[in-house]
Image (cartoon, rainbow, N blue to C red):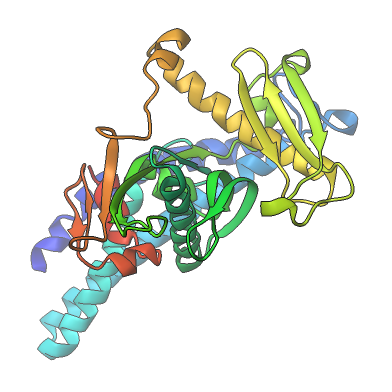
Length: 367
């Protein structure tokens, strides 16, 4: 523990304290300018007298975030100094160990955030699941994954809302209805950063509930996680490039049919990307949420096209099938969940399917 005090400057490097202090100083100078509430570039839509309230709020929020991070660092530094003093004063070993354990837990949490420093890591996410190879089994597996991630959101105190869900046909002895595809909005701090590496193909091995002979089946479903792009000016989309359709939403078997055409489907003509939203009762809100999904998907496409031409991306699109899986869930003949990238594995399948994914998500992020 005595060496920890000597190592405090290295903490400042790891947590980028110097860089954060420089940014705080820069932003504080920005807030003191006479034109702080105006758009300096004149490129955004502003209110009366050129007031750009949105930009001012963004800078203020960033400043508050950085100040809070510095405050957390200073508190940790003080806690370490207090622990060292306790040891020097001959504090009981048992009490000292408790304080050290609490301190190490806090350090681990802060170190973990270092891995979540991407542009959109702190924000919300658009989470999509698509049934792959395996027919009704795959559609049922997509529904199981949806439940798993919804449970994860509850544990993390994230808010999740289904924006659009396409259902399969009922089957099996219980008349189970699977999911062909589903888009979910997940709101919460670091939602995108935590979930982004869940993107990929998830493989399930089990005795099929749809097999009269109780045969073992392998099913696949793909997961796509995108950052939620809230501002339309971040991604340029021409109005002429959009085809917007309105329709009535309905659940499985034609249930819950809306009498009004409040659901929205938007097609981005240059890329062929199609998104939809039917979660809200008002057409305008559904349109706004569908646009957020579209912005996120175009953002992802823009990231990919920096490395390859669009035609190459389409030609090498990953299929939800053999050879492309990132994680395997085996329910029969034995029980095992294994991540094929990090090597993290557990036989407690029920706990994982109930949303306890921390060990896998931490393992992925630290790769």
